[in-house]
Image (tube, rainbow over all chains, first blue to last red; front, side):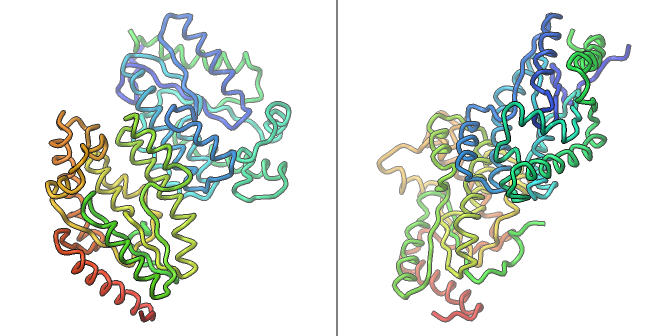
Length: 223
Length: 224
């Protein structure tokens, strides 16, 4: 088997799961983590918007509806930079497998839907290492809607209410998520997403991911 | 395309002052503001890192030395974007004279001195409105340090201690602020900053600034 080469040049592996809210990312990430752990590899998970520097500022600002499209983009970019420098890159350098719940593709989708110029957003993240694998959980909007309403309920920003698509929560959510999906659709080929039908069962999705990850592990890249 | 290089079409007028700490820019801006108010002009003032959204967070993170060059840059960009949309843009639309103590050029000077890519940070700020008048107060690091550090040691980030240039804060300050000044000097041509000698008297600088502002306003058909 040919030696797998990482795209970022660090010792470890960078694996991303992308998808809109309610697409099942966290569940799959946990399963993947256990699967990798069982084979004695070092693995960590890092989630979107969890930096010690700024995550709570974002939550607070969102609660108080203080954000405009530009500050929204920049705050997330700051959160990302902090996690990248303090968590992700050190782990990659030490040879960990880093599993990421969302990566800058999330910012590209959400910020562009909020009216930002795509090149401006790309510039914000242009220093980020390229992942070795990007899984994308593809979910139709009607299924997403049911999942979210059935679990967390609709929130203001997830429904894109700040963008002003509609004052009706349900309608706004539908429009916003559809627009995000359009952006993800465009990124699929540009960034080589491994797109997985998110309506498949948890086990089926898990085994597709395992298969892809195992291929890389079998190449001996982490030995 | 950057808005920073295109003339704006707002009714109002944007004036900013730039320069390292101790260059006297805040004094000059305060004098200008009081005068403009006294002659009945609509004027507002906004300063660097003062937004409701993020300035406290940034100050706290600085105290704890938590910032990398990249996060330092992005947090200040958040602050700037917040003030631009909340304060500067509406005031310019309403025809105010907006006085800004530091502007995007501060980020270009400081962040690049910290090793951030010049083009990257310029792209980050490409939504900034081009000022009608941007004044740079030129001072050397030694004079600046004598002015601001007469009764305190330089602060961690102000001295660029995060770059580990020297263990001595005074020495580090000299090196780091020297780099910041180099960046400012490059921007005199790049962005048409008007350079004033910080060591000139308060009076002579204020006279120059008022002359320049009058000319800017004249060109907009406003006579003061």
